[in-house]
Image 1 (cartoon, rainbow, N blue to C red):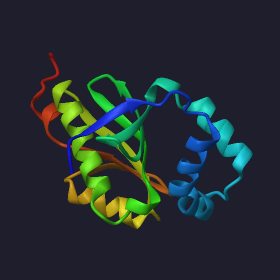
Image 2 (image 1 turned 135 degrees about the horizontal axis):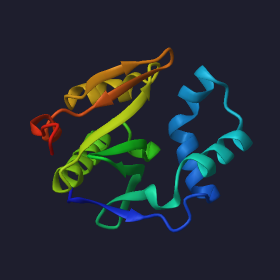
Image 3 (image 1 turned 180 degrees about the horizontal axis):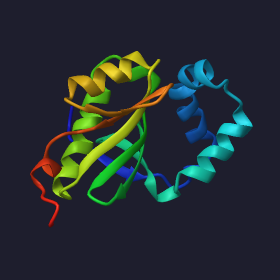
Image 4 (image 1 turned 120 degrees about the vertical axis):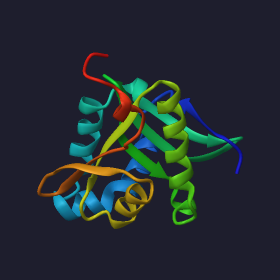
Length: 155
């Protein structure tokens, strides 16, 4: 696979993007909270800025989408949705490695949260060396160790 790039999504609140997000999150969200389309559409608009959304691309192939925001010395990954036809083929890992490359170039770490019931995603993050920083009833919060571990409090 060629290098992965992140192209801004022109309309992240479109039905196309929503359906992709739903294809990736439905099972976990429905298990924990129950899925309601209208509620989820509004939550996405209210909680995620448009400029945080990107298509994950390899040449002219769309691999999926990501939503991440920069803050302090980190990128917080809100969403990684691999195209349904590509799941289980290592594409999520390659997208995560591209996110790591971007974070490293900006001297940032990566943080994220994951549903406890999303076993494939939990395995992915643990295989990439993510550490659990906090636990909630339905979620685990993770941090990628590395670049920020060498920073001091005076920086």
